[in-house]
Image 1: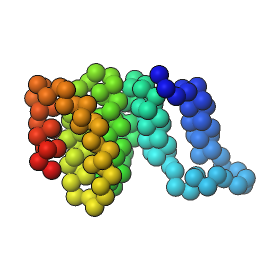
Image 2: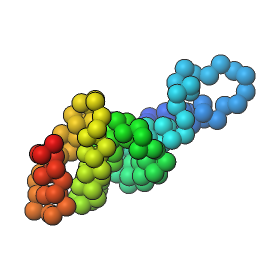
Image 3: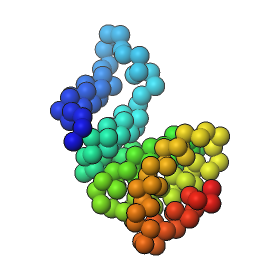
Length: 144
């Protein structure tokens, strides 16, 4: 397993503590644009990259439930990490459903980044093409 889970956990705890600071001390620059939901998303992304789906999936699901579809570009990107963690957890149908949702959201955005981020997810799903949910999402991805 690549990465350092203990250091990641410590950094995430420190980030959460920084969000909780309410005194007059100068805050870190990132506190201006990171709220609890963004921190949850970053936390889920970290656990995804560390291949810790049991931590990543519930964290990302909780954060994304609060994240508006009006932020389609960002939400489709974040859904790609949820799909990846679902694959790591062996939940292939769930990964296909999440990937389908990300494809829907990314269809109307001008940014190519969501589609680029979904390419490896779609590649991983392709080995499960025999599952109807996967076949459907692969067909949608190929048509887009």
